[in-house]
Image 1: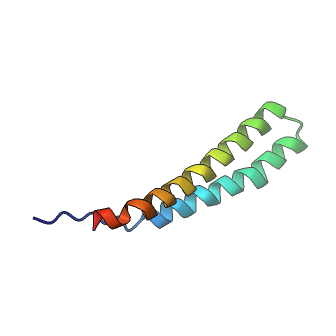
Image 2: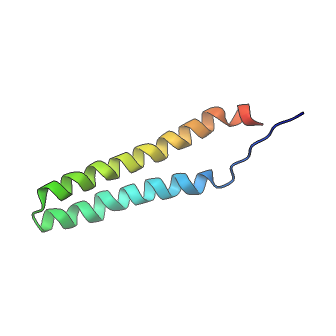
Length: 70
């Protein structure tokens, strides 16, 4: 019996994670800087980097484990 798992939407998830992370870093963090909201800016930068990191991690894991799923 053959088991195959194909996740066709994984690249959309990776793109969305990285794109929203960049958006948060470029737009939200600068908006909070202009409003002099230091805690919110720090939180936006942290969440932006977490989003980018998770996107890259998912892409790496998919690249690493996709031969095993075929």
